[in-house]
Image 1 (cartoon, one colour):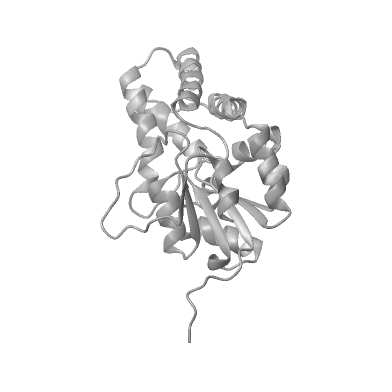
Image 2 (image 1 turned 90 degrees about the horizontal axis):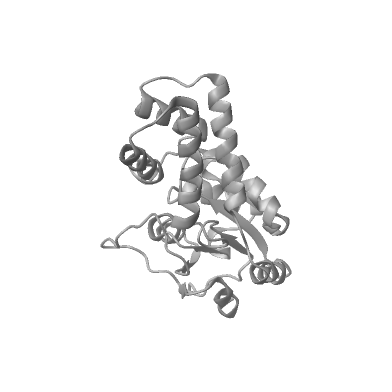
Length: 241
């Protein structure tokens, strides 16, 4: 007789923004403001409302269709063309990409409590991170800066694999590198579509964290999966494991 009891948990895999660290409107605005100032210095004044619409579309468009991720270079080059109807030079593009990386890394903070939690979990499980972001280099640099990277056995970023969650490819990459089956892992994330639906569709256990204001908002749809746990704070995870 087939048992409905899941196998023992071998891995805990985390989303990054608004899960392990805050990346809500405060951090988004800081990054966008730095990019806007650089654009003005390089190219001159621009339509700020158009800039805001483009940046919102940059964040939301990957969640449509086949869930394809655009690289940071593609997004940045397109932004200049949409605002100024011209191509940036290679040097201008380099400066913009470097600025975007630096301000992203500087905007990321973590807490001693999260680091301590990861330390305790590391003694029991393999740990991984799967993040939707167009620049893997920026994610890894911020993980090094905060110290979170030292606890991760694997880091998968949508900008490196070409698809965003809820597409199975980022999850499957992490599971493969951790050498665990989907039902042997729990995924923790804040995004209803990307994290909860993506993980549950693949057969993972899932904890939905509601600690911060998630910028990418998606309504529940008929037939959506429910998370196994709802966490008001990341530190609540431990009591469910």
